[in-house]
Image 1 (cartoon, helix red, strand yellow):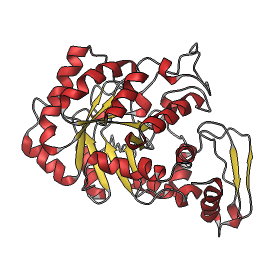
Image 2: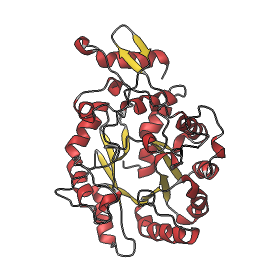
Image 3: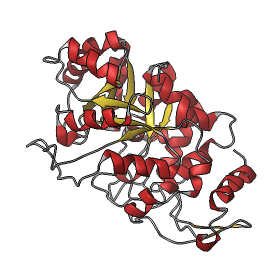
Image 4: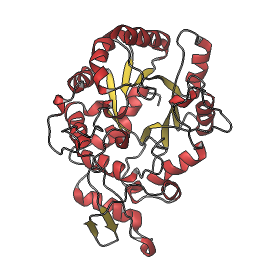
Length: 352
């Protein structure tokens, strides 16, 4: 998407709304305030990072007209602790975020298809997620569940598959769990064995430092792998010299080289999502370096996601992130369609 076409699609989003043509936002990799009208596109500096999420879910975004047709949000959650009590071991207490609210949010961005991901707070009880999946239906929804591979039965898996489940999640990061190579290998092989007949994907949320172990395991699995949130680098420590760096060698990050090797091997995907979980730099310049390298070496293995409702980071405005993801794709024909749609469909299967 060229700069001119990018401006045109934003202008299209505000035609007919001259009474409200100012939309402040913080850019993902730079705090900017974008003033949109039918005749100009101006920028000035401002910090507007924590816009009220309720406003985002109820009003169409100007970028709605820039989103590729058929876009999938590949990572979002629903939670309802009143109707679906969380696990006694939950590491945080969530607020209520329903599927109706979720779809209103997605619609505001011009997104019609979602992948529901089981959050850590529900453990292996997928009831809330499955109800939401039934609500959206298989034409608009897919899901990633959490299972105990030692106890799950094939009929349950088959029933879930017919509903739109296409993966299982192994989440170590949210619960601060670190496994050695033997333990992680055993866990992933057990999951792979039960999902392989269905063609599902294993979605992992681990720290970037653990990815070299994954590099050894993935060739043994016989299934696809998806890695959450940029591979989860630790860029949040106060003395990290890379924090906020607009130019650095991403291969200096422990585990990054292994992540790139996995992407190039063709069985692994990575989500560019949840930047606020990974870096304290308000402009996220360090993550932009990583994102550009992902897109350079493996454009067919990168997935866009909103991480709605941004659990433990409530109120985040995801529009700047989405806008920047579009910007990162604009100089390569067809790349935005890949990152926002096609890669997700290939990961989940041709029937997506």
